[in-house]
Length: 79
Image (cartoon, rainbow, N blue to C red; front, side, top):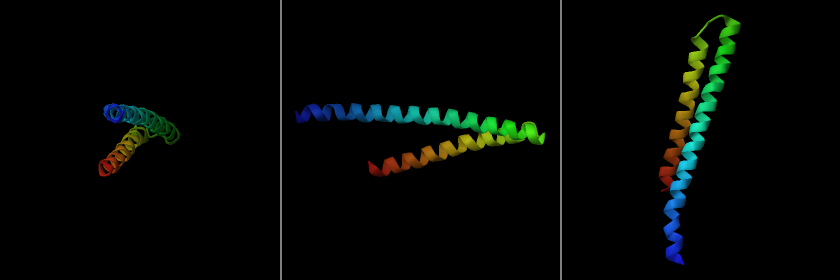
């Protein structure tokens, strides 16, 4: 029974990593489009066509990447 449990642990770990990466990918897409839309609205109000839109888009991606990197570093410490 103990060997059976250890056999599924790597599969559980791999599946957990796949789900976590999928969640981060979804979060990155949603955040980047949200920041892109907010930048588009701000550009429309101020008349600065692509400035805020591109800046917020890059900021959204950067923030998601930094959060994902921080979480990866924390996971690496746990291993």
